[in-house]
Amino acid sequence: MKPEICTKKLTANIYKNYIFLGLTTLDLTRGLWMIFLFSRGFSLIELGILEGVFHLTTFIMEIPTGIVADLWGRRLSRLLGRVVFLVSLGIMFWSYSFVLQLTGFIITAIGYNLESGAGEAMLYDSMKELGIEEQYKKTAGKNNFVDWTGGILSFLIGGYFAVHLGYTWVFIPSMFICIISILVTCSMHEPSLTKHEQTRLRKMGWMKALGIQTLESLKVIKERPKIAFLILFSELIFMFLASLFFYLQTYWKAEGLNEFQIGTILAVSGALSAVTGLMGQRIEGKIGEKGILLFAPLLLIFALWGIALTPYAPFFFIITGLIDGLLYVAVQDYLNKMIPSERRATVLSFQSMIFSLYMIIFFPLIGYFGDKYGLEYSFMGLAIAGTVIYSFYLLFSRKILKI
Image (cartoon, rainbow, N blue to C red):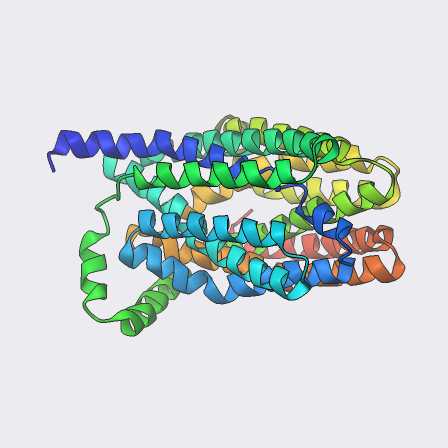
C-alpha cells in the first residue's frame, strides 16, 4: 500500500473512532437494564449476581481476548465484540429466565472483553504510526466527550421511550444502532506497528503465543511499577463510580422517580464528565499530574459522604461526572505512554481485568446489604470504605508516584 494511502486510512481511523464510540454509547438500554430486569421480578441479589458473573467472565477472558487483539488484529477483535453484543441484547430483551439472562451476561462480558483493550490500542497505535501520539490526550478527551454525548442521548431517549412507548422501543433501536457500528468497524484500517511481532507469535501456535504474550506483558508491568499502581487505584475509583451508577437507579426508582427523571440525572452527570474530559489537557496544565491524581479520589470521598448522609444524592452523583471525565482521560494517557505497542492491548486488558475483579467482590455485596438492610446502608459502607482506601492511596502514591 502506498504511504500516502496508508496515512489517509490511519487518519480516518481517528475520525471513524469518534463515530464508532458515538454509536456504541448510543445504547438506549445503558441506563435502564437494571430497572428493566427489576421490573421483570429479578431481586437486587439476582441483579448483583448477574453483574458479578459479568465481571467474573471479564476477569477470566480479559487476557485471552486482549491477546486476540494483539496477535490477530484490533479490528477483528472489535468486530467480534460488536457481533457478540448484538446477540446479548436479544437475549436480555426476549428472555424471562434467570439462567438465560445469566447466559446473556456471560456473552455480553465476552463482547466487552473483545472490545475493551482493542479499540484504544487501535487508536493509539494509529496515532503512533502517524507520529502524532503526543496529541493522544486531546483525542482521548474528544473520545470521552463523544462517549458521554452518546450516553446522555441514550439516557434521555431511552428513559423517554421506556416511560411513553415501552421497552420494545428501547431494545430494537439499540440493536439497529449496533448493526451500524459493525459496518463502521469493517471500514477501519489495521495499524502495522505490531505486524512483525504478530507474525512471530502466531507461528508458535495459540497456546504458546498466549503464554509468551502474557509473560512479556507482565514483565512490562513489573519493570514499570507506576503502571500497576495507576491500574490498581484508578480501577478501584471506577468501581465505586459504576456501583453508584447502577444502584442509585434502583434506589431512585423506589423513591418514586421515573425512568426519564433518572435518565436526566445520569445525563447531567454525563455532560459534566464529557466537558471535563474535553478540558483534561488544560486542567492538567493548571494543576499537573499530581493535582489530578490527588484531587479526583478526594472529590469521590466528598461525593460518597454526600450521597450517604444527605437528601441531595442526585447533586452529589452529578459531580462524580468530574471524576470520571478527568481521571479516565489522564490515566489512559499516562498508561499508553508507558506501554509498548506490541503489548498494548494485553496490558490494557489487565486494567479491565482488575476492574472486573473489584466488581466481582464488591457489586454483589452492595446488592446483598441493599436487599437486607436498605441501599442507604450500602452507600454508607461505600463512603467508609472509600475514606479508608484513600489513606492507603496517599501512602503508596508518595512512594511510587513521588507525590
